[in-house]
Each structure stands twice: as C-alpha cells, then as structure tokens.
Length: 233
Image (cartoon, rainbow, N blue to C red; front, side):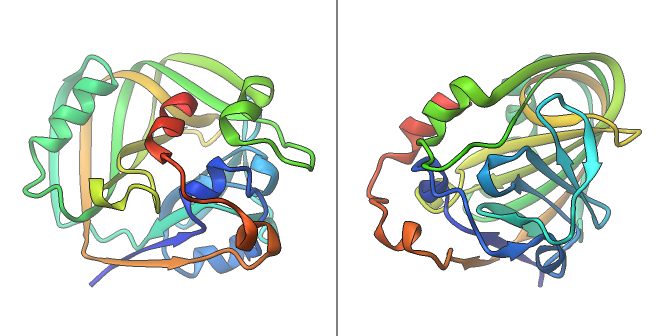
C-alpha cells in the first residue's frame, strides 16, 4: 500500500520555519511524484517521474541539487488505480469540483497527476529569504513572482488532503505545474485547460517527519493555518 510522506508541517512553514535537514536525495527515496519547497523558500518544488525540479523566481525550472534541503514537501510512489479524462476546465474551482466528483471519499489522501493542454495558467514562485525569516504570508509580498502562460502543454502535480489534516498539511487541493519541456513551472493560482488525463494514487497511509531544529521546537504552532493559507494562495 503506497504511503504519502511529508517533511515538516504546514504550520511551521507558515510561521517562517524555513530550514529543514532532509535532502532532495533522501526525499526521492520516499517516492517519485510530489511537491513542496526548498530551504529559505528558495523556489517551488515539483517531483515528477522520479526527477526533482526547482522552479526559480523567474519561473524557470532546473534539476534540483541532490544536497539541497527542504522544510516542507509531500511525496508518494506513483501507483495510480483510478484514471479518467476531463474535456474542459474553466478555472481552478471548476477543476477541483470535477476532480472531487470522481473521488469516492474525501477522508483519505490523494496524489494526482494531470496531463493537459493548457489554454492559460497563472503561476507563482519565489526567491530565497534571509534570516531572520518572516511568516510566509508576509515574506511572499516581497519575494514572490507571479506570471502567466498560454497555449502550452504540461503536468499538474496535485495533492488532495482531508479536512481533518489541517494544521499538519494543506487540506483540500494543492497544485503545482511543470510544462512538457520541463523548462518552466510553479505553484498554481488558476488554470484553464482541456483534454486532461487524470491519474490518481489513493493513499491510506501517511508518514510525517518533523523538523529537527530549535526554530521548530520553540515555535508557536497553535495557529489557524487555513486563514493564513488563504493569504498565501
């Protein structure tokens, strides 16, 4: 049975706990599809077909340094047991609703791969922060870059986590993207696409590795993560 493995907690990331000690090489031992970020929030992470990419602030994708570390990432083996197509997606809300219509339960975790023709997509990545770190929502106002693509092909890597996991991970849907040529990508704000092939790995096991540092141990993690997440989305 495949396992969804997570490094760090979303509450830690939201509070500016931006340094972990799990390397890309160690992370890839846990699966071959996933998403996350890098220490100092130095770009968005996309893991696809066993390759780990770093999406730089300008949106350009590069193979991640195997020794680079992450404070937050989710990864699983790619073992889809459910597949279907979606002819047309008008926006991210429409996409989420059409995905949910195919999922029999909202009480487990999912790793989803969506290969599609992209009419339009709005993305985000960011440049690295310097210590002392700000909470994520405050830092993104100065470090993030937002950009759009049209008429391309690519893959959305999507997690869907149950609502009861809020505070540990990101509940609901979370989408990252990389284009077919593996040259550009980012965190997905919104998307319009067509001819989407969706393959879903159902995950009934969840494993979490907490960060091992003083910043995490002394942080106040008793926060309303969903309110703060909305400010970063």
